Image 1: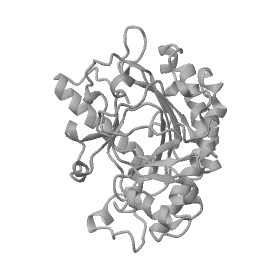
Image 2: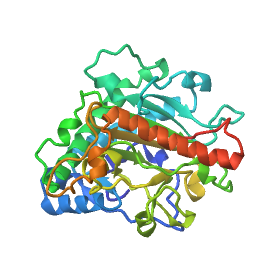
Image 3: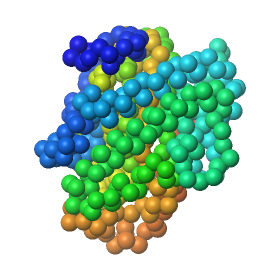
Image 4: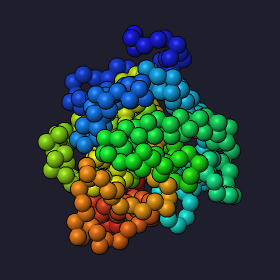
Length: 372
């Protein structure tokens, strides 16, 4: 942290209780300058575009421009909100904050998997706060539960900052794909109903000798446009390049690579929506989040995730551009879903996939646990 101004990390040293271990395989990610993207630096924009057509994951430097610095600070405040409530609010109270019924995209509510006898989650817990309910232009009868309401301003600030940063990235991708200005950014307005959310996650510390059961931490791709992650301990993993080329959801354990948290940066990845819009020119990377590595595993791990999704009525189909391949006849004749329908279907398909694997292992289909 010595290369960054101390004021940027004032009072957050506890988020870095131990160094990241160097004896684990680490993914080599590009570090992209937000400042250069805002300055329309062509080389930096091309560097980001190359990443987005490959792994889809990169570090974004949040310290080289006031917009990024503001988002970093907002994410740290949101993390503190999670620390304030997740370990202390009773499980029954947290579980009363539920996702909406019907077609949904996991943009609201509390989730956890198995719960230990002490009332704490075994693997992870999280809450989501919906952009639509805090900023949307619909009239919605909704209030945050009391244990989150006191932190509403911090969630709004983080989501507002995240929307600005996401649209910087989207505007660069528009230019690189020879798309008219606004093709992506007009679909990702803060006030539109979209299913955007902020998610605060906690992974309770465990015995460092405990073996990680990978089936409790499913590999997945995100049913979003852009995900911006702030995390202070290890846990996020992506697939090494050669294994990633094979595709599919089943990956050999030795093909996973750890993403090392870098102070003052966010980890950005593209989601499946960008693959759809560009007919697979842009890539949504496979990843998973497991317990922290090495000695870090003994400490509670917190993350703050801010996502951008297309406006909920957006047709999920590819745009026309010389840079984007034409649809195949099969694609052209396929049913086109709205963003909300598409997101719901993607999430349900992942849930069904996890259920199938866990059912096969358990020999039964009931009492399945999810920790995501």
